[in-house]
Structures are given as C-alpha cells and as structure tokens.
Amino acid sequence: MAGNTNLAYRRLCRRFGAELTTTEMVSSMALQFGDEKSLALLERGHDEYPVAAQVFGSEPSVLAQAARAVEARGFHVLDFNIGCPVPKITGCGGGSALLREPELAARCVRAMVAATSLPVTVKHRAGWDDASKNGPEFARRMQDAGAQAVTVHGRTREQKYTGCADLDLIARVVEAVDIPVIGNGDVTDVDSARRMLETGVRGIAIGRGALGQPWVFAQIRAFLEDRPIPEPPALAERASLLLELGAGVVDLYGERRGMLIMRRLAADFIRGVPGGAELRQDCNRFQSCADLERLAQRWTTASDRYSIGASSGA
Ligand SMILES: Cc1cc2nc3c(=O)[nH]c(=O)nc-3n(C[C@H](O)[C@H](O)[C@H](O)COP(=O)(O)O)c2cc1C
Image 1 (tube, helix red, strand yellow):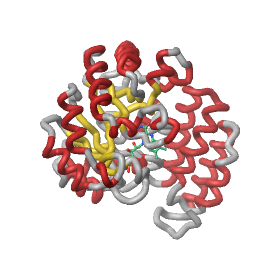
Image 2 (tube, helix red, strand yellow):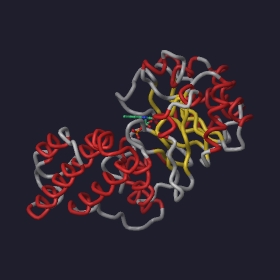
Image 3 (cartoon, rainbow, N blue to C red):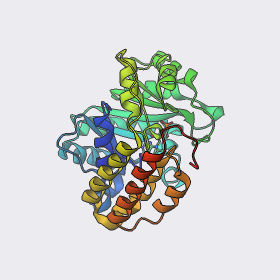
C-alpha cells in the first residue's frame, strides 16, 4: 500500500505470519528514468521471501523494462496494479483505468510476461463502475495473457473505498478462471477472513486491516491452522513494535522523511489505545526519533493504568 508497506512494515507483517508481501506501487515510467524515490520503493530485504514488487503504468514497452528492473532487484513476483482509483494515476491511463481497456491491459501483461521469468500477477478491482462490473471477464483475459494469479478487490473504481467489497463478484471470478484468485477487501479479522474464504478464493490480501495491527496475520493464520486465536499484543509490546518500526523506517529513509512516514503509521498503531485521541495529536508533530520514543514511553505508562479494551478517548 502506497505510503505504508515499506520494507520495515512488511518485515513486521511477515513476522506475524504474512506469507507473501508486496511493495508499494511503483511507477514503471519513473523507473525508466531511474527516479531515485521510485527505486527506493524497490528496497527488498534479503530475509524477505517471497516478496512481490508492484508496478503500474499503461505502456507495454515501459512495463517490460520495469519487469526487468524488478527481476534484477531479486523480487520473486511481479504484480501489476489495475486497481488504483486515484485520478493522478487513472488520468494517465494507469491503475483502474485499464479496467476499461482490457485489450491494452492484456498487452501490458503479455509484454511483462515476455520480459521476465518471474511470475506475473494482476491486482484489479471488480470493474470501473456498477454498470460495468467486468471483473470475471477481465480476470479471464489476464489469465489468457499469462497472469499466474489475480488479486481481486471487490469494489469498483467508482466506489473507491466506500461501501463494501462485493464477495459475490469475487466468487464469480473464482468460477471464471483456473489460476489462483486472491480475495481482497474489508478483511480485518478472523470473521471477515472466514467470509472471504467462503467465496472459494485461494488466498486473502489484507490492506487497511493490517495497518496498526500487523498481528492480524497471526490471528488469521491460527484460524486457518485450527489453533486458538492469539490475543492482540499488550500495549507495552505494541509500543515496542512501534519503536522497532520507527527504527526500520529511519534506516530506510533517514530521520526527517522517516518521521513524516511515522506520523501516519504511528497514528494507526494508536487506534484503540486508551487516551488515543491525545496521543494521535502528538504523532502529527513528530520531528525526530526522540518524539517517537516519548510517545512510546507515554503509551507504556498508559498501559500500566489501563487494560486493552478499557474505555478510551481513542
Ligand atoms: C492509503 C492506501 C494506499 C494503497 N496503496 C495501494 C497500492 O500501492 N497498491 C495496491 O494494490 N493497492 C493499494 N491500496 C488498496 C489496498 O491494497 C486494497 O486493495 C484496498 O484498500 C481494499 O482492501 P482492504 O479493505 O484490505 O484495505 C491502497 C489503499 C490505501 C487506503
């Protein structure tokens, strides 16, 4: 997820049981120009296996070049974004705009498949809008173009992030293709994971549900393996996870940029924490690692006074 799933965050998710992690989406065009910020998004951990790099764009030859760059950087899967609803991306024909151009989308996939020996997968939405929910046919075209799996977010582009993911549509995609389908949208806990699995998908992709609670993977894994569902970590442990994340983000981006990223990531961690509203205001002022440490300290003190689930200002 753009702005969120940097290497440090992916490491945390993986430790809690995420089986496959994916980079933030990266512009294929920017990679062509050697843009440093985009290249930084392709930072991969040597301990990360398997990890996918996700690219977006709409120009087959540029995407082919991006596929080669991703392979050279040691990723294990190349994922193609046909889901992003943001006008800056769709306006250039990328992201979910390709849902309306299935022939061009197929050419993009074919170009990437030809350029790399990595498995190419596609992440797409249910359709552009309610009147054109072409998810199942679209997935079939991606399969025919050489995609080895599809991840389907059960919302249309028009919905952006409103309403609910359409699980019936995801079930129809499963029926329409022979390749694995990974279901995506609104999975935040064991119950929502169970509902998603009822569609027949082979895997679940979790986005927002992992923000601030990477342990959701441990809980869903336990459910899949028929083990008791672990409780979320205690507040003091969450604070130390946050500090570890902060250190990883600073390693990647330096203190100044790192703290800007941590303002958002820390606010997610604070969801449900007693006194969260006040702590969240502190997040918006992060300038340095010391600010992050102070927040974790206050949080740990709060954990002595409250238990999880106590009524809070969050
Ligand atoms: C801030 C933000 C950034 C996102 N960035 C990406 C991205 O880079 N690539 C992608 O495939 N999806 C991205 N998404 C979409 C999510 O991956 C996911 O498809 C969507 O939020 C629905 O699933 P969820 O309910 O599990 O979050 C992003 C979503 C949000 C809210």
